Length: 390
Image (tube, rainbow, N blue to C red):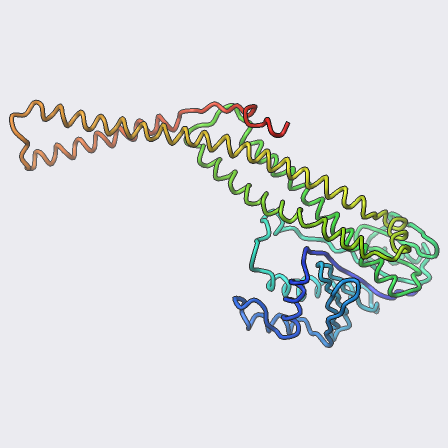
């Protein structure tokens, strides 16, 4: 068995405008004027680029090579693929992953650090990038021995013609692909499909978590006046996250459709189906399903917001009524006091103490009524607000 190359990659939603920003950074060491020139220069030097070019094929892309033997392609749709010739496979993998996550990852994260934020539910996710290894003449025993170096065990083998694919949890071997360009296209398509599906699965998990947060706030029999504003603020924070994620989901299908149109190699499609069970139609159907789930989430959230906004309005009205009562009591007390006087009160120490006493009584009365008001409970009937999601 001969180990030829090692690949690693990922996909992030980008456009040709983003590609131009990456090019400006790599070629001219500048980007957004609000970013630090010193930091941009440091990040650019950290990439150790030996050669750089901007090319056009079916998609526009940037290709560069590093002094340590890594070749990187960054496509206009956000696909990033790194490879290097295999030597010491263990150390090569560590170097490739470190370069991808630290050197390149930090640079790209800084370039795109301004603009629409990444939802906090996604920001902390650590993506595992399975390594793809190309080989020739690999047999079952040799693959088993190679995976054993990483304390992994092959769980599947699929063949299509002369090509065979072995997989374990963190590594994949693609064996006996004669055409290197076809091998690269196969690997790039694999990374795109895998990352697209992974993102959809994250959104599915987030849908469940966010739905549960809304349900805990919304589906209760009653709520205290003191809790209304806190729940309303929580729902508004959830709304920001939902809108951000919904926007990202809405963009995803255009990337899959573009790659589907550009996939002119019929053999590539057949190998993708046979070796990886990847079909663009299935990918788009899954995207449509997730998009509808988030549509339901938005409707569910909107009904919760409407319900608590109405309760908040009722709560505000009740609070105003309390102030009116306190004000009325104060006015009546003042009028009654004047009725028992033959002349207007003179300004003296006794009058001053009297006024302070009245203010203190009013304050205590206000606090007491306000405390009782915070204990007031409002009935919640979710059936009136869930008609739109039946």
